[in-house]
Length: 518
Image (tube, rainbow, N blue to C red):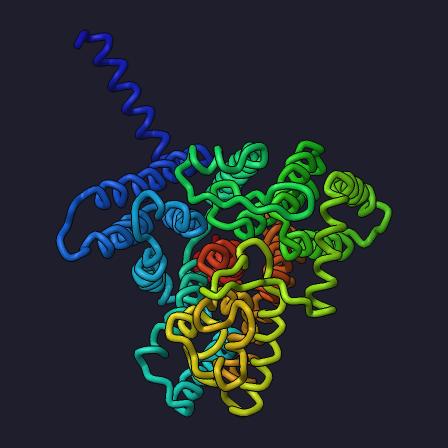
């Protein structure tokens, strides 16, 4: 190697080292890229080993969790975002690296204690009695309902883990510091990922089988209305719709804060996602999120004319998007009326229990789950049927006797031979398993998050934090809509992204009052 080449190599190394050490958007992006490469390449390499006894099934998710926990020690915000992104795509990732779905439980079990050890000295500042009391009552109700109903702990314990892991992640985010450069970097990275996912979704729309074959994904070809359903790199179009809506709402928030037309263009481009996913829930969540943003604009500005100047272009853009998808939307919402109001079955099962639930949303099962949860709560007052017994993954894997007792085993999508739609709701699961006490306690906890977002949105301490609070409020409204017809707060691909956004606002709120404010 010549002297010149050696000098250039040293300069390149110093430059890379300086970039990685930068407390800036560029440094954040570089560290995030390295972290993502590590949590993809290392488990993939482990999956190639022919280890005895199926040990690789634990090493693959364990390696992801260990890398994220180690990264959190030095790069906390990068690690949290990397974790949320990995879980969002892990259904697709595990096609290539094998089992990855225990990564979230293992990672949360490592991240939460580390975050707590960094913040426990300030416990008097970060604790807020309405939030913590609500959660305490909820868990007491969950345990009491389990004991009273006589649910075996071999079933109840996985149910307890299911409801706890997302809440632990929220607290891990709450206990984390969020400097301005990290917030800005995370928003930029999230936007970049969103744009890439949306662009790939457009390519998939042209030829779904070829797209899925190229990326090694299982074939998923469905149609709603007049076009193919798009899921991009996700395993299901519902996840694509949720992710695209989240990024779109933050782009709309950026437009409201900066008044720059390019951000409106980005927002409208990302708004194509929920329409291409053909999910009524995602489209409605987008509209409700924007309505929440409009209300916040009126609250802050209090001048309808000024507010109209920025929101009328948003309305006009959405009208254009709606016109493009007009025919498909008409068919979609006609089907909605038939399925939910006329209660027309949406699934036809054969003798072997096969169905086409994946091609549509099982309205009949959702309505049955809502009705059944009320009956379960009534018959088990004041508690429910116990953890792992209703509307959750655990109740599906160990088919709950409650489904037989309340004739839910006769509903397509809830039958024992193919209970694919058991997890299609959230609030019925809370009511059915923890009763009215658990339901009201969980609702109170969610209300405390809304109160924090409402209070923080009124502050005026710079465009960056205004953007974060604006976007978080709209995403919170989106999440509430999603929770009505999905297992939102139990669903790892979605709930971690939501709690990362909401938790960041809550973290900034209490650290402002701490002895060492942000």
